[in-house]
Length: 382
Image (cartoon, rainbow, N blue to C red; front, side, top):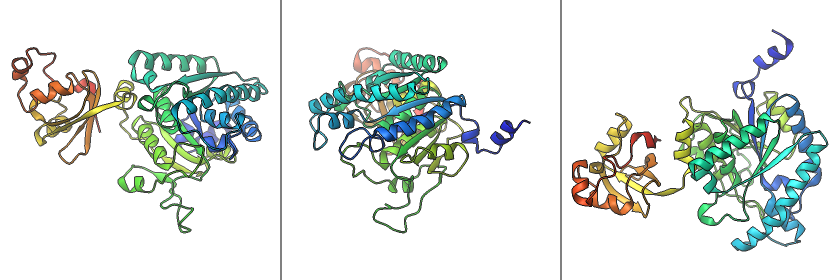
């Protein structure tokens, strides 16, 4: 065993086995309080990232900052609230953001590519696959993809919500080994550190429990959209996709060195042993939730214990106005999610056939598309 292999064998698994790494950069890191881009920080960060490229890591950046950069260029005193203003500010800022990424990475002979995504790009299966293929090709060419939400065209109904969520979806999209969310705090605490001096950093999370979710608070930043709760939601996507995730303080870019040297920096979320396959990830997280179907105990047992499809006879209630092919939550009588999947019937159709045997579907509707309301192959159990 050579010295390099010996050093790697001493590292924790989430570092030793990492090859493709997604790094999410928050607005508060990339911009000053005024909204202007923090150029010294970007230069220092990119210098560190260039070292990891030399170690043959595949690096993907999910970068916030377009609206913040636009705020700085337009000399705005606060973040815009109206959607057209946000979109216009992002249009000004996105060009600036990528311009400086290109400039600083070029100093290390590295090439970057800009990818702007909307939720629809991951909702549509073909576009989902196209995005996956594009990113893998860029990595093969040793290009660093810089990914952001396309804020100039996104509206509330199709937004990812924040780049924490987007980074987890991207990590699942490309089968990344590790997701690192860099922010301006040290990680997840058991209480809010700014209001509780006894708050302790949680260094390792093996399961995201209700107690872990309660530890998450809301952001107080004027320019960022996320908060700890969105990072916990991102962690749920990552670990269910078989990907380790770290929340760490990125104000000092050299913390990345410490992470890859095996130090306990930030909060580590461990992946589940049985991760979702690529198509299951698309069903569970790529699709927008169209509604909810509440089922009885018999249907719940059939789905969870017997691996069966959802039939009309086990449906108690339908919520939402969804169409065939939409993704819905499947919940028990207490409202707890037990699965999610793609429906073969619309909400109005399901209301008519609920609590009826499948043999009655044709009689009630005058036609029958499928025997199952949600087929097992199009379902992901929680």
